[in-house]
Length: 610
Ligand code: ADP
Image (cartoon, rainbow, N blue to C red):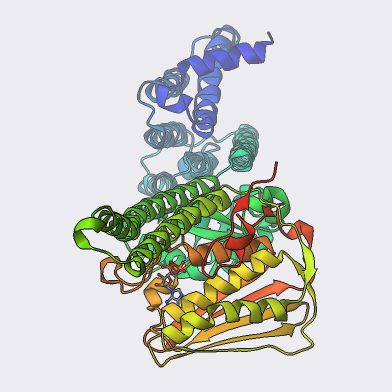
């Protein structure tokens, strides 16, 4: 261990605890104590040798020796109290007292020591306090004036008459003062260097901290303009800090979230409370980084902002700034959205179950009552004296009710199979025009019974399409029978077909009861029926449209419904002319029985592929 480091350790041990935590204060205290303590101790050490050479000391010499205790006392004072400013002021006072004592003894303002008065305010510059500098300057000036005054009043002892000694003393005074001033200048330079080093170290520490934090720290004006943003933003947004400065960050905020973003900042700037906001930020290259999970290039960010506390440094009337911490919360948001979707799905499933129970109890009870009622009549045919025609009629009614029950149950089975996925379609080329007219012919009788005018229109050159012809018929039958069912007597149902690019377009239009806008959104959900279930005048399970929707999807087509209450409904179906196998995940659609496929309103059974 070198002597210097030993001295430094000893000095550090003397420092007041308040000076040990802050490096700059420590350097100042060390610079105050070291020269005073070491200088005084060195002078004490040399004094006996001086006495041996000079003989008995004069009163002035004894006074100077006594004064040497002052720097030691000052060092002790600073070490005990840590009051740097006061110690500097006391030091100026002690130095001025010594200069005054020597000057008064050696010729007043003309003394070789008087020049040392210049050093007093110079030394006070180390206090880093204007008050102490002003005090020291005033003290030095007062001492100079006092010396002039005393000299003027003739209270000074007789000046040194030996010109050689006078010149020698003057030279010593100027040289020693210059030397001391030079030492002060060096010390000031060292302190300045220490201060710069400490500052850059501190800056580097904060920069390192900001660079290694995943959260982004930013400073904003009240209007949202960024004045500072930490480098973590580059990782978060894939843009450079320079691009985010000013309004760069604001331009990345999703348009819909901009009002909330600005409100949070201006609220934080206006009050003392911290505010928090969640918004979307455009991220460069987000798509590649995060994949399809993140729609578009936006990420969700949570920003907490609070007014910048500058501990009274903000000048009165100046704009309040805001400091904000941003964090990527996209994963949490996605989880929340998934949760919301799952909750909605669960609610929909619950509503579907309720609808199912309500519809089914009605749909099953009506034909079952008919079966029980008419079979009881047949059992009591002796008592009721039924003729053959009546018996046939009752048997027919029981048969029809049984058929209806079967179609209801089949519909449920078909739908549940479709919903469980993985179906295979067996596509083949067929003529859609013939299939369309065939379906309309099958439903013509029902339309006539209901007093509805059914007409079909399709060009003769309608191309042959590739698809599942049975599924196609099922789609047309379900849609046309719905149109007839929901159209009042005297109404009109029009079926038309045409080609639009690579798609076959079918349109089934009626001027029937129509569907309310609220219900329209949910039409096509399994078991959903528009209007109130118990006020219904029509039979139905609420499965027809959802089966149509699934079949159209299996073909890679689209279905849309336009409707207005009391005005009518148009259902449009677009099917690709050439069925592409990849458009659907394989499904086999086979008729339950050859006869059933031809029956209007009946369902097709969908078989899962192996
Ligand atoms: P349903 O067995 O009840 O007919 P669907 O799935 O075929 O079941 O239709 C669902 C609901 O959509 C129907 O209950 C009805 O309220 C409404 N709807 C379907 N087609 C029409 C239409 N052409 N006009 C008015 N409402 C319709």
